[in-house]
Length: 132
Image (cartoon, rainbow, N blue to C red; front, side, top):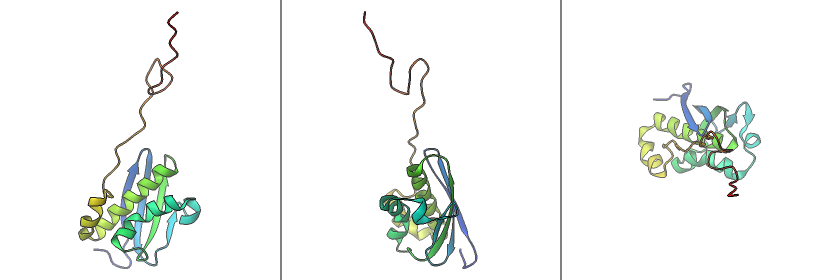
């Protein structure tokens, strides 16, 4: 489906973060919000989470990745990027689904922040109770 000049796009979401990913055949360069991958994601753990779909499919240095992400925090954005990369790889080669699906890399994490309830200070927290 994809040739050397064609970009494959996909969207991933996690909590309030949204990531749009574009994959183009290349040398493995990753850019997030026009910044180098290593600068945007400060820890090795976050960097490995983004690279996980490439590591499992053995396509680590085959595609250049351009990511635009916004909303949420750095961990939510990392999860959104991971899902978007997995979806883009699946769009390029449907055979990769057999590898990605058992690892839950194609599943959107549905957990969201619980809303604050009226008459209390937070989602679960209650004001202090005084018996007398």
